[in-house]
Amino acid sequence: MEQLQLHQEFIQIGQTVLTRGDALAIASGVILIGVLGLLVSIWRTAKKRLAQEETLRAINEERTREAEMRMAELVATQNELSGHLAAMQQNITSSQTAFSKQLDERLSAVTGRVSQSLTDTTKTTQESLTKLQERLAVIDTAQSNIQNLAQDVVGLQSILQNKQTRGAFGQSRMETIVQDGLPMGGFEFQATLSNGTRPDCTIKMPNQAPALVIDAKFPLEAWNLMKDADTPEQVKAGATQFRRDMEVHIKDISSKYLITGETQDTAFMFVPSESIFAEVHENFENIVQRAHNSRIVIVSPSLLLLSIQVIQAVLKDARMREQAHLIQGEVIRFTKDLSLLDDRVRKLQSHFVLTAKDIDQILISTGKLTRHGAKIESLEFGAAPQEAATTTATATATEEELPGKPFLRAIEGDGGGD
Image 1 (spheres, rainbow, N blue to C red):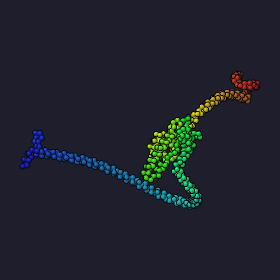
Image 2 (image 1 turned 180 degrees about the vertical axis):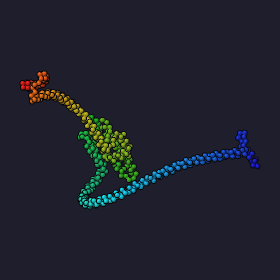
Image 3 (image 1 turned 60 degrees about the vertical axis):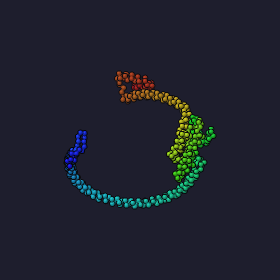
C-alpha cells in the first residue's frame, strides 16, 4: 500500500511527472545538503573560535608577563619609597619639634598682642558707639526728611492724576530740557501758528528753515487705567482705550502742527517718562508705526535732550558759516603778518652771518697780536730775511681783509722799530 502511494503522481513539471517517492528523495537530498552546510558552518565557526582563543591566550600571556614586570618595578619603587618615607618621617619629627617650640613662642606673643588688641578694641568700640549715636540722630533727621519726601510724592501723584496739572508737569520738563540745551532766541513756547494753533514749543532752525514743533500733552488717563487694572479684561480695555487715545492725539498733532512752509514735516511727541516710552515701543508697536507714518516722532526726556544737542550743533555750525568771511579776513591778515615776520627773520639772519665773519677776522687779529706778544716776551728779533719777508707779506694780505687795518699797522710798526 505504501509502495503504491510512493509511486502515485505528486506533481507534473512540463513533460516530467514526479511521484511522491521522487519528491521525498529530492526533499531528503535538500535536507542532507542543508545539514552538511550547517555542519561545515559549525566547523568553520569552531575553528575560528579556536583561533580567537589561541590569540586571546597569547595576549593574556603577554599581559601577564607585562604585569609581572610592572609588579617587580612597583616592588622596587615601593622599597625606594619606604626609604624616602623613613627619611621624611625623621625630617617631619624634627620639624614638628621646632614648629612646636616656635608655635609656643608665637602663642605667647599673640597672647600679649590679643590682650593689647582687646584693650584697643574696647576703646574703639566705645568711640564707635558714640559715633553710632550721632549717626542715629542723623538717621532720625533723614527719616523725617523721607517722610516729607513721601508726602511730596503723594502730592506729585495727585498732580499726575489731574489732566491739566499733569500736562503742565510734562510741559515743564520739556521746557527745562529745551532751555538748558538751546540759547535764548532759538526757541519759543506757546507760539501761535498761522492756523491759530499754539504748540507747546517751536524750535527755530538755521538758514530760515521751518520751525520744529514739540507737543508735551501725552495722554496718560488710559495708561493709568491699564496699569491700575486688576483683571485681564480691565487690562485689555485699558490697552484699547490707550491705543485709541494715542491714535487721536497723533492725528491732532499731524493735522494742527504740520504746516507746509511754516513748520518741519516732522513733529515731536514728548513722553515725560523713560519707562512709559520703553513700554510703548515694546507693547504698542502699531502705535509707534502709525506715528512714524504720520511723521510724528515719540521722544523720551533722554531722546529729546539728544535731539536738542544735535540742533545746537547745527545752529553752531550755521553761525560758524555766517562768520566764515570774518575768519577768512583774519586768516589773510595773519598770513601777511607771518610773511613780514619771515622777511625780518631773514634780515636778522644776514646780520648774524656778517657778525660771524667780523668775529672770525677779529680772532685772526688777536691771534697775530698774541704771537707778536710772545715774540716780544722771548726777545726773538733775529728772524731770517726770507722768513721775515714772508711773514710781512702774509700780515699785509691779512690786514687788507680786516676792518681795523690802521691799528694793526701801527702795532706792527712799533714792533719792527723795537
